[in-house]
Amino acid sequence: MSFASRIVAFSDRFLSQRSFELIVAPALADLEFEDEAGRRSRLANRYSVLRAVAGGVRDDVWRDSGSVFKLALLSVCYYMFPIVVGFSYFKTWSDFFAVMALVLALALVPVAVCFWPERHTARPVD
Image (cartoon, rainbow, N blue to C red):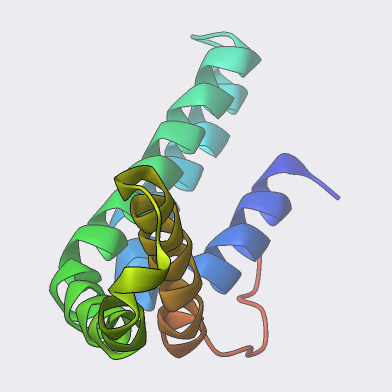
């Protein structure tokens, strides 16, 4: 499996179509052009593609961050109510905050499930 096909497979699974077409696909085209021209090292060309993929991930996360925050807040509020009602069971503040951190981490699981991208066929590699 070549580097470009691995990037396409990763992008297909974790990036939106928009991010792939506007950010990653031009970087892959530049990678192919620069490899043929031999102007830069192969490692530098691959690093630029990896930076483009990281930028695509950042763009997707930033675009959906408001929805993720709202769903996470809803889950946290739902699971925190019984803990706050049973506040008298905790002996110290550190125990209370440890359980709060655990609830926050567990509340992010349904949010991650809601935002997990659906599986579909892979994009063709040119």
